[in-house]
Length: 551
Image 1 (cartoon, rainbow, N blue to C red):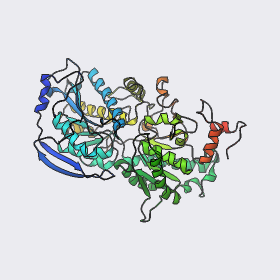
Image 2 (tube, rainbow, N blue to C red):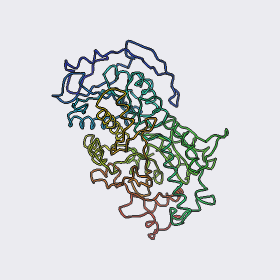
Image 3 (cartoon, rainbow, N blue to C red):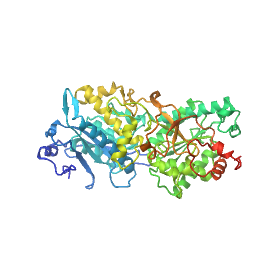
Image 4 (cartoon, one colour):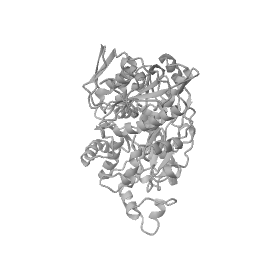
């Protein structure tokens, strides 16, 4: 079943059957024995055959439109690893968004008549192989895309953990890989044919912590710059001196490495870190969760992991999370009644799927537990700037994605997949070649401005991009950008048709609300005004409207 790849329009044309004649021999890397942190054993062997995949594994060649040159050799093929089956698997939701973005890129290239290589437009297609959200299938799927379906270049799938091994297989096959969602530096730097469009994971923590330090300094400088003039919550001589960081990480490669390296950048920012009995940064861990559908049992596990941090007097809590873990963290804090001065999450508030949670009254819905949490982010649909290669703005891209995907909001993950495709296409066209060394050199020298970010790669092949910090502020379901807009760009008003999907309002620029109030304070405010604030309303004005005051 290695060669039966049926395009949407029907069986393969005779001219395309040559994909079954591609040389299958190569170095197969086989992944096994993976632990909870995605550390695996890797064996390798030279084989005349491709490594095995389950018979149900989805493989698809997406063809250029009718009328394009039929010769298999004339196509430029981007391989893509996606977790498209089984439906509901750990990475299925992320991969569905990535696939929607790749389809937009495919349409864009088709409208241009192909990719321009040395003066000639070449037809384009994707070769998509599913890894089924299984770490032990990542290298197998990569080999099938390259040696089975003829991919000239590869786009990595979801997560650092999976890309870590997929990039080894693509390197063994002498093929460039653009990592779409891997931010762990060691994953990108492991060879000279792997590039990544997300900033290094420590920058996530550095960006958020520095913004919190700035907010603490502002609070110390003037009482009216504290949220509601609340210096009593800062137990030290100053709010800055009251900060003590602790970390909780989901057990994946991206999140665990982020917290480990994040402890160092936090100390460099002048914030002391809680230590464990061995004198090392205190980092507790929990199993990862990737969807909003979490249980009370999972929240209880997080509460247990939080207790050592609370016992050590942590006041700046950093959560290295994915969507489900970030949601669980905020609900666990609410149930514990523990309100550190500041809380950081990653890959949670920046996920489009979280917005419905902010309005929901269902059991275990996030609702107002998300308020005051801050999160670093590389991209938002409202960022200004038109892409040099795509000729799209963030708003235009978001609208196109929604129209093609039933109104669904695209997250930074889908946007990153599109940006990686643009970066690779730009490098091919500037190189005027499909030769690996020449395209790699073009990527190394790239200075491509795209609506997603400024895609310039550092010496290790990773995007060297600034980030911004978002905060969900009280009574609102729209994000406030509180620090560091990427590339110095502004935040634009979202058109009416995009506001509902992004939460019902518009992102805005404003100061970070620091320190967080206690849960008792928040509950009191909600009793006074249980709904979402209307435009122009303010929590402080409401609590002083004659209905009583929250102390």
